[in-house]
Length: 225
Image (cartoon, rainbow, N blue to C red; front, side, top):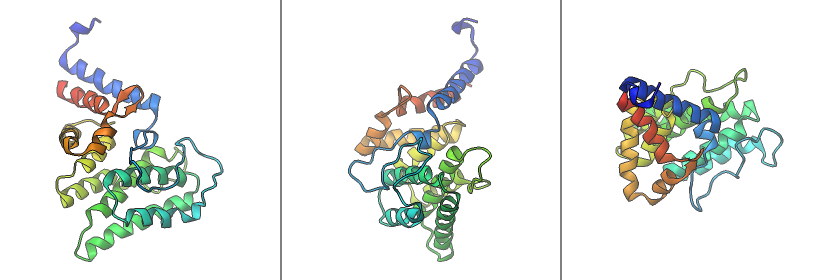
């Protein structure tokens, strides 16, 4: 069938399928695409395909991750820190469980204290979604059954307009583009005009496309359906 004979629904499906093919070739975007954070402090660098032994002491993973997050860094730094934490966590089920348990308790405690912490809910939500993308099938996944995306949306509602959180939510929803995904994309792109580091991340390359192009592809797919 020639391209010009495709209906709008078919074109939309092509765009969505193109997006899924991209993820299959490049790997899960929350894990395989590093976030640019400039000179900000994060966990020690680790390659996304790291599975074997490492010089990093995994017993320190929760403590080190929480120390960085509790220093109140920008959302982009939190995203990269949680990405690295997930790669490390895959090597040690006990460390993986401890980290997400502590982050979930931290967020819940903020609610029970009467001062809900948007960043705490963002952290556990983003980690849960990263775990879902990286913990292998057949392996215990401490994020099973957790609504990480829902927690990220809760964080956005608590924090108010935050283009970096919208960017995170757009990445999470890349594999299921819909109206919510489109809204996250539009807010992230608009906010990047006043956020140079976010703009740099949107211009970075993932599987031969810029992130902004990839987001536009999935958003266009939804619009054409």
